[in-house]
Length: 285
Image 1 (cartoon, rainbow, N blue to C red):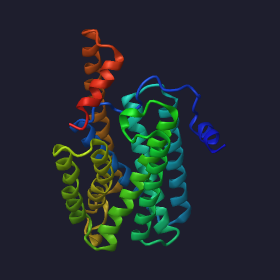
Image 2: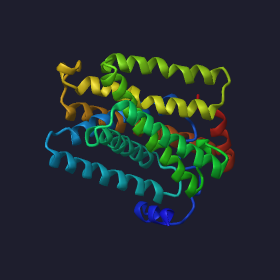
Image 3: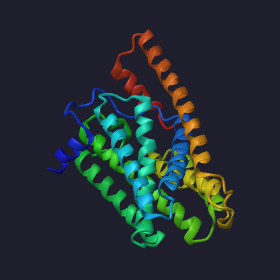
């Protein structure tokens, strides 16, 4: 029943994907866009729900929710990976995930350490259910509707967890946002080194994916938080607009790069399943 309700909300057609629905090649450009999306989502969420007026903040939350649903509907209705659609979904999940994490603190009064622990438990639950049902957490296996639901559930949880963790270190632990961002920049080197030392690629991918959230969000908060809170005091709309423009440009470049790789495969007569396998081999580089 829940699955059918989710299908109706997301506009799922019931047609299974025709190929993997996420990027096959996890390149440096992938990680740059991911970092920018996290920072952009943080600044946009702060702009939408930053008003002290609860009605205005509530309207901002409604706008973010609608954009989130539209983005995921586009993603789930697609039968194959589409660069612009995928990254639009990531950006809107980043925004709504930020607001979901902030809601526990702003409206329920939960301390940041508690919201961090809560979303860590949610993520662990999603991973456990995903593994129990599919016996894989690899993004190269996102080729069925059910696996896609698990994937986006995990992505949503990582954004909420990262937001709460960044606020915990930057605010509750009083590291402030620039030192907090530097801290997470050091932490994200751990999965990179671990991968090149031969550790499991799936584990290192998800470790890095989680850490990109507080890393990007900490620097976004540093840019648009007031000087009284150790920020630069730049307007939210300026920070968000600049990051959005950068993400659009880089996503367009990624789309061109992916299209050229696809055309190169076609030109040498490489079948689609072989291209997918090749993408899996060179991922995380």
